[in-house]
Amino acid sequence: MSTNLATTFNGSSGQPEGWRGWLLIWLPIIAGLIVLYLPSLVDLFRGIWSTDQQAHGPIVLGIACWLIYRKWPEMWRLSENQPVAPSAGWPIFIFALLLYVIGRSQGILLMEIGSVIWMLAAILLLMRGSAALKAQWFPLFFMLFMIPLPATVVDTLTMPMKMAVSYVAESILFWSNYPIARTGVILQIGQYKLLVADACAGLHTLFTLEALGLLYLNIIRHDSLFRNVTLAILIVPISFTANVIRVIVLTLITYHFGDEAGQGFLHGFAGMVLFLSALLLIIGVDSLLQLGVKLQRGSNGTLSGT
Image (cartoon, rainbow, N blue to C red; front, side, top):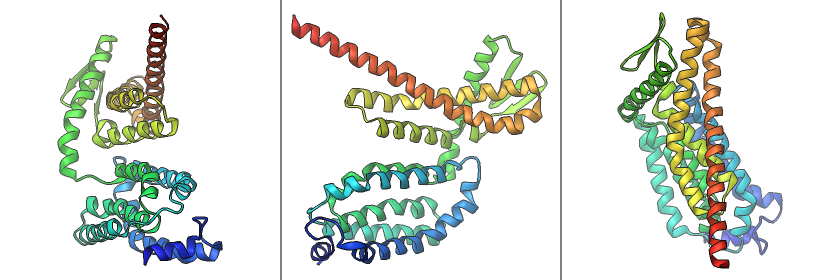
């Protein structure tokens, strides 16, 4: 039945027969997604997404929607005349619905928000088949970075990261002859004390920068597998370095301009420094990898020529 329905509206061209056919298929689906997930989005915007730790959530959602829109023509072309997959789509759909019901009723954001990825995957399988899901895999994967993690997991992983960032930042400033000392995650420079908070060096920041790096990889689309895999692995130390740079910048701002400057407008500017430094580091490392790949290809060409 699903195949016949898709054939009726898609025709031989793989597209709906006019805008009424398009609306007849997709408008009820879009309306159902809005009814299902709009209350969840409202709760997120009023709650956890309004905090510094989870402020990246709306950005990730917006980028994921843009990526889906960007891949939509390619998805439609690849799935043209391809069979739908109800045998795989309906179990995933039921699983996603169960995740949402349990998560929504019990207040488990990991299940409630995570269900949207499975729901979209099921819809693609039911409406356009496995080729559509393959075309849209990265936008769906990218949505993982907007899912709020359990507080226990975040707290457990965040503290060692903050300790490491604090230690490195203190060491660099101490070597630069600044009067700085550290107690745990508290830095004292001159007469000022600064607490390295979760927003400055936490797991959420690492997730945001990891998402930024993967987005960069997806947009650039290198042909070299070695270059892609290496850069994806190096995103983690790049994110750590960017966090260290942010803490150092914020510490120096406080030391030279006072506590109000550090906690006020310039604190937000330090957040811009974080993402700018991470992006520049990613581009720099990528350029070095590109140079290495070119040198390797050149040496291989020389050897084969001789």
